[in-house]
Length: 165
Image 1 (spheres, rainbow, N blue to C red):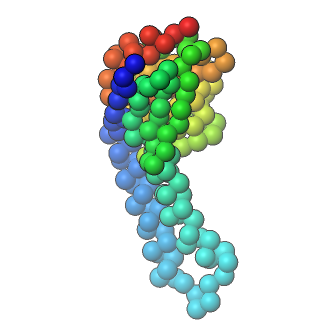
Image 2: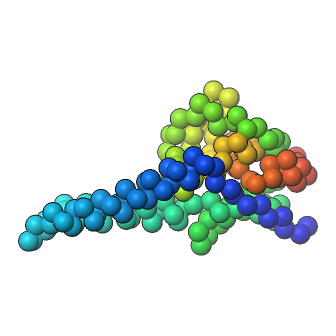
Image 3: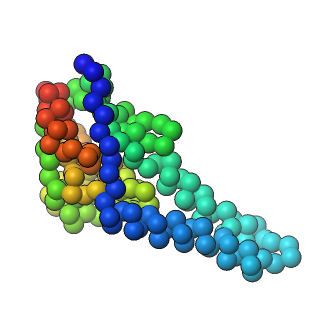
């Protein structure tokens, strides 16, 4: 089966959060450098390096798109891919309200994406690879739930449901 490629569009909210966060993470070390002591301590050096490291780490986990290929869903990142086998997929459905009321358990809630482990009343515990809540597609597996946000949710659902068990 040929590959199907989907983009991961950013919501307006994600663009705003990412821009403000990136600006702050770059401004903090610049500000600290104006206050640098003649011989900086280890703690001061860590304070200088940590914000850009957080920015870089967030960028590495950014969701750039999705590919359905060889009975797998590939989540495209910056320089790497997360592979999700589709053989046990029960159902895929588009649900723009899927992520409402979610609490982050572990992951990122706005620096270049919404990725990691989340929980809400509707889905229970789930893993997200998201960039725009309004384009949410929920993938139900026997032991896990995933949320992705492709540019064409209905088309993604149609293609994923061909893989249901």
